[in-house]
Image (cartoon, rainbow, N blue to C red; front, side):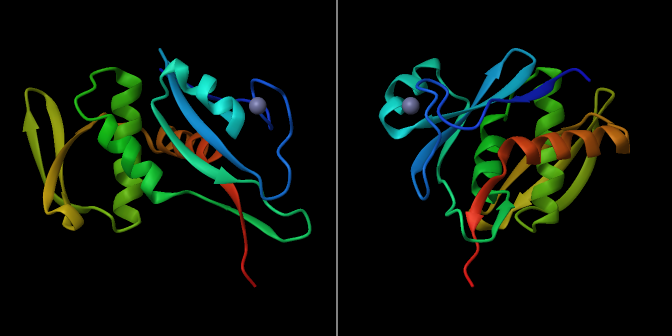
Length: 166
Ligand SMILES: [Zn+2]
């Protein structure tokens, strides 16, 4: 693998305080060369936490202890990451953008429009109906296992608990 994803500990990375029930906090994704690292910060520490220039961030909430909790991937966060990766030529970023594209096609956010070849590279054109625009995505020809590995790392990195409404 040309890139890896690491996950930081639970609780705030700066003050080490655990998050209490229903506390709002920030999760941020940092692109550190060949690794995406997720860091969580409590609201008072966020001002300092975001100084490192996160690649992407989102606000979330700690779940209540006595409720059943499920985790989910926020499509908006993934779409934001996809947009930010446009034009990046690093291999790990191109691979991630491709995997994000596959996920967003599955979630029906994008429609597959066409394939083309451009100097030895396969380019996939996607249609984004919500904004009536198209995106070109480079196909890195990942093996199925590589796609699975990236998808599972991506979910571990990005999922967060949400309270299930009964
Ligand atoms: Zn803190």
